[in-house]
Length: 397
Image (cartoon, rainbow, N blue to C red; front, top):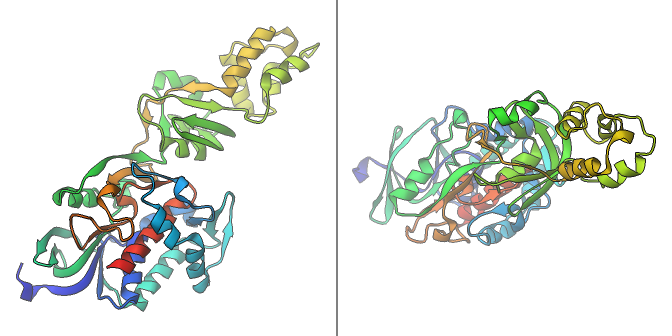
């Protein structure tokens, strides 16, 4: 690449999503000459579709404990330097109305498009130059600089920030670009896999439950180190809903889930106490705490279909209660990246500087956002990681 033909910048940010726009805006407003490059036709599609179109843009309770990583303390520095309150100030500055839904989750009152427009405006304040749609074909060292060959021409930059996200939702442009760049420069990866994703089951084993598709209830679900109380949703192929999306980040193939379908009550005590002369069918009683369709299926699964409570042996009721409070089931897999909200794994953060996001072995090369091995819980945590990692890299470049 001839230097004379290449346009020169202080910073090239690749990926104009949440983390990339944040990094570009922060760096540009510090006086850096910044170019922001993205291969997609539409800007920030993942922001646009998030939170049902209203963008769950942060969580008030964000802390290191809400993130999964093989290097769990890595996220601490960035999260402390750019907090949910910092992002709320930015949102308020742009006059975007918002509300807290529950459990600290903040959403736009209006459309997620407002967040995109806010980030674009912040970039414009720093005179960020845009290249979109524009693909990066090659990145290499050129002395003290980085040389980029793109479909929009050759570029030189002192710093390159990789903000290209993970593998989740390929139909809106997800790719392994960031992982390929890491491999090119011998930066290790933690094996990526889908996270915050519905789980699927063997079709034959799941057949009795497939007809319950659409039924939902609040449950407690556990697997490995994960434990959540959220809503569960039955689907034709398995289970979804916030409870399952949360636990999917902890679940590994071959592991078993434990689900408590009635977390607030001791079912054995209630049923045995109410048994005397009670002609109600077991399913009728269960339907106090779960959808009617599920109550009937659950009574049948446990051999109590159509049975009056008074006719049930105490042993059978205890077994029903045990199965209800500790439903053990082993997923066959997940719905994969096409339905995963995020990617677990990615660029190994042990190879990065936690205060700047720069690769320790490659001065001037940064990784931020979902491309790295930092995965938040459901509920605005992954956006907060995008803002925080984008901010600290933007302050460092």
